[in-house]
Length: 508
Image (tube, rainbow, N blue to C red; front, top):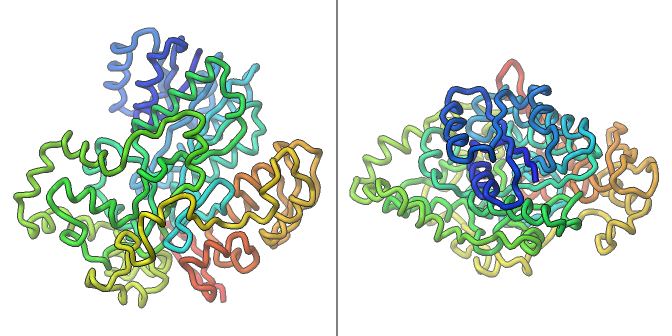
């Protein structure tokens, strides 16, 4: 099998490459490396380690000629490249180039091939937006409500939608969840990003090695012709029960490595109370049933990180005050920290992150006053994390039907639940574009699969920026059922940026 991969310098891509290149069915893997100087060493290392099994293409992922060279003559393309936070927060241009323009360039290159290679698109859990204790579980088909100012998720939303709209011959979209990797601690001590994590945010952690193993399993079984049922679907990459935590106990696991705890190192008001992303996947078993890739336990993985980086254990002997002075004080005062937004009066980001400046300043200062999922304040924690106890969102149509039996009644019902109308379909093929109209009167094309199973809707309204979900929720029960879990129905903000500065305009 001839394979093309992007993103092999990243945590998932590195594992996917290493675990797939040795398959007997692999003739070669052609990888795309950006022209950055740091990739020169990686290119030499890959060539030395794998020889003729690796072909290297250098260039920008947004360069269409480079993408055509990458995918020419291969059987499968695995697109994993992404500029993720905090890099995407720091550089809108870098995020746009990779996550939006690069995704489009890869899709167009695949579509131009004859025959077309099969295409695997790695998307993200960030598309689902903020969740809390009210609806911690989600699944494919849920509303896609990208959190305001989340540049990464915004561009990834464009990229996924472009893939679905392209009507490729054979594709699969995999929405990656929160990912554990060996350098978790190191990669999160240079930016205020960690404070974006709400304490009650549901997070389903999967390891980078399990994610890479999933790609290996897909390629191995595709080479044998064993997975025709896998293609032309959207999936969530999850870990099941053993990967489910919250923001609070994610910090607890991480700080245990250096002899601390969430309470020892943090104050509760330093953390965002909303506008994050993450959820537990009610459908995490769909890929697991096909490929059996879920092996790592989140708690054991954190312990493994600690054993791998012995230096972290020295933190047990360093006074708390010194760690705070030289690490956490710097991070919470970083320009990307909610604590600094409040301190400096960054009203737009404060409204998005807390609801208002008043709400931010009234957050509990003492841990005894904080209600936490992880401590059982909303019910038994273990019971809450079980899939069978999940409270699921309504998708607005008869989900008991297989998609082969969908009809115009289902489309009309789904459109009405989104505040709009179904206009016309070209036929019975659920992957061919139909015509829809949103509550603002915008007519747009999207396949029934994209709308009903993908959770996408009007590209003019729901693909920010600007972010207008306060407005949309007033017309769309589909969006309202999750948006109002963390937003007041009286809120009426339009979020965006002008001249490089964030704004939150009250549209009342």
